Length: 263
Image 1: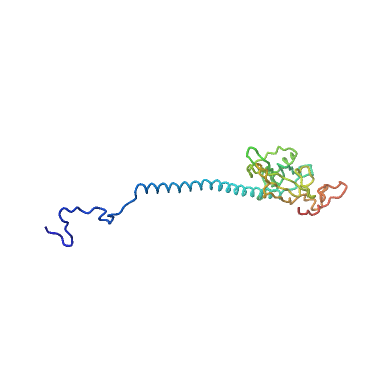
Image 2 (image 1 turned 90 degrees about the vertical axis):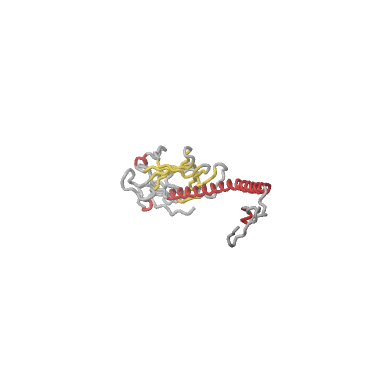
């Protein structure tokens, strides 16, 4: 029998080499069934431990994220409140000398200049707005609403039936805001209405209604205007408030209010 050069002839009766023999795996053992089951059991134990740790960590992470988000929203609401109070205007309704400022512990209504350029035409050419902050059960928190200031709305200042619109929710429950007001005597009170002047400062107390805890974000702001512009010019036809916020007798000349101290 002729054979090709370089190839060994297999003797008769010798079996052909198998796959494992050709690839060099002859004589090697694989995993047994018991070893595979142990590996699967260890993998399941590791996964169960990771699931337990994750189940304990995720609720704490969610609670921390919720507190952080609530704090940021409360900061934005307080910034809006302080900006509005600081921009309050001394505007008296027609035929009255007392400014439009109705404040209680839970609700406050006042006049301020609008945010942005003042309009020169339209329903409110004065460019003023009546702002109200109040808790709303329907919206579930502190709501800021406004209405354009016109002589018609100012004439009805004694009525609470302003047609407010553009309501926006600033704070959600359980956060709750209460207001305090101080005159130039620096004595805080829970109400401010039917006064000859605007409050010198407004205190904003932020608390958790569920626990009653007062939050550290509570603040106070000064009201920049608390007398008519005519008093500053010394040309007021009506008596101007004194340094303590009271009105002098009508037979005394109107004087400009003394500078306010910092509370």
